[in-house]
Image (cartoon, rainbow, N blue to C red; front, side, top):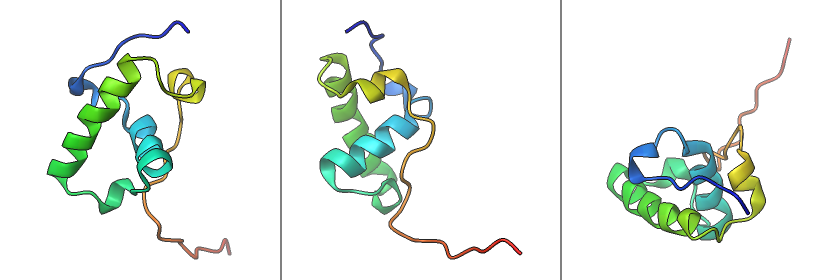
Length: 77
């Protein structure tokens, strides 16, 4: 696979991918993480990304990541 390595400085640019990975691989919603634990976990995500170990969907780009377990009950009127 051909992909661009990332750094911990891309925390915001890769947040959808990170939020998805956090939920899918670690069972943790992004909204449930403290700022410090999110940054620590992001460093693990960066290492995994840079080893090319993630499924292709991550490298192709994820437009929306799971933010929380909360289900909003909003109905269009």
